[in-house]
Image (cartoon, rainbow, N blue to C red):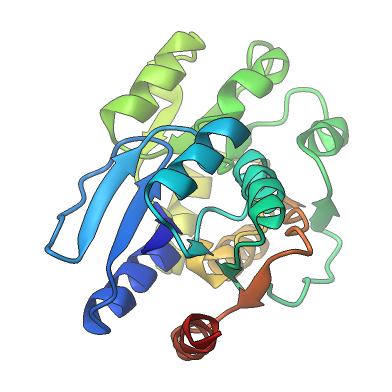
Length: 251
């Protein structure tokens, strides 16, 4: 049995591959999503600490973990690495290939959210594309400065925003896309001075976000993708993933 940590574009690709190869698997996400179970697949949701993950792996006779979770899910990555290493269980990281960094005066790269906030200036209008979980972490900023967050249009995301008392009228509901004009319109409509985003690669349409910022002469701050644990075997394409699964199962 294979355990897949998903909830991303990469997770969907993993599920499709395993279905096509008739390989049974469990698809796992932190928050509940709509997932169509089949005779080959089952679904679970909810966070797992080290003890819970170890018990789950043992009880369900998991042989391989495919980690296709969001690159910024650091707690999950570290938990998986510790438990898998302890059990000597292989972990395949199906990740996003990083883009070449853009060298431009309007583009800044930082390692943490705190470093990003330190670059902001008084009264700048901020568009945060860092996800709903960053709303609470940025409360000291948005309580005193005009800020917009783009988040997913789903009940759980809206509930998290509401719990932080973030102004509902400053929420932009929707997904990132490769539509450059749409991103430009977003910046211009809200008269944005600074865009804050994460180094999400092509799956997160980072290149489109940067191009939109440059086209509108807008500052953009990019939070670098955290390092993936060294224990993981990293692949970036479905073909590489298929090959690595075959090799791992053969061992």
